[in-house]
Image 1 (cartoon, rainbow, N blue to C red):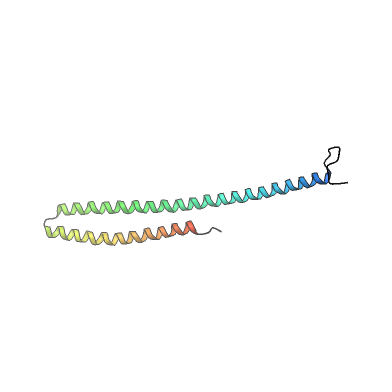
Image 2: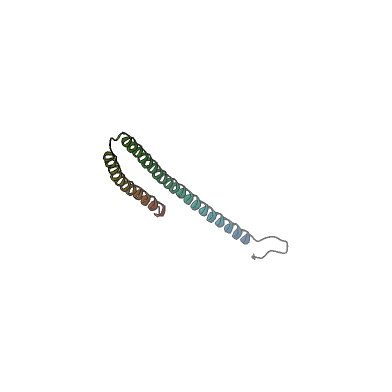
Amino acid sequence: MTDKIGMDGEIPAAVREAAEKSISEARKAVERMLDMTRDNMTAAEARGASIRADGQAISQKVMTFTQANIQSAFDLAERMARAKSVEEMMRLQAEYAARQASNASQQAQELGSAGARLTESMIKPRG
């Protein structure tokens, strides 16, 4: 038996078997590639969810800090409105400025740490 198409147009069994084997191997390779793609998509979705959650936590911190700072400013305004002297107003303003400087430092440190964690989670390879 030869591997050539006969005069009658019949394809030899060895050629058909080789074609079937090639198609089967190609199908398996594509299925492996699709499985890897699915795994990568699942990992990317999980990473995206984690990054999104970290981002939302940072946004919530910013909102909490903003609300606290606004409340502090209104508290100062109310105290200053009740002040009986310029000296008292100056003292209230100085206390407020010192408190806000400390708060700003703490808030910046917390946001910086949260931002660093977010950045790390974005670039850290997942295993």
